[in-house]
Image (cartoon, rainbow, N blue to C red; front, side, top):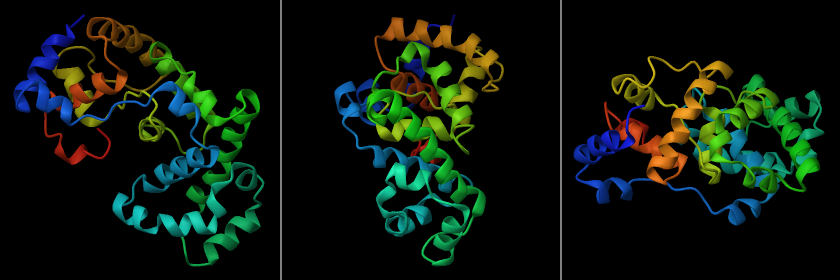
Length: 231
């Protein structure tokens, strides 16, 4: 297995030293802080990530207060109960982006989060229990039960919410290839079964988080500046 120290050294060299490199990073929240995040904030950010996929992120951000208004603050019980006709009426207001598959996904993700709430007491409690060593398996579960949260979307959402996350951006994938860790990463269950033990070894070696490992990889090679919003 490639020592993570080699990757850290290259990333630090490219960014003015380790101290400056670490100043660029986003670190996960404490478990107790994740547990306290209100349910509606999880749904709002999941929906924002869904809407931003393939769109201009800044434009979606500018319109997001209107989404919050139309969806009444993203109460997960209320959004999960919306009918097709109600969702269509919301699009017809002209206040939000008209994109039926994405808007319908808001309801699908509310249903997913409602189930987590029923099982754990709150959405925050559910995600506060995630373990970095089981990240791949947990992520696959969210991708399977969520709506339009495949690819990088679920990991981006969780990173934004403060959950320790590894985002397989193009820069991260390029680093994995250049350091001869993986030739390619498909995101499948088989791929995660091969990659998670490598990640766990890096966690042991560094004593750091998934956020840290992900962001060091992203900054160790290639043009990473255009990915500043996700890494």
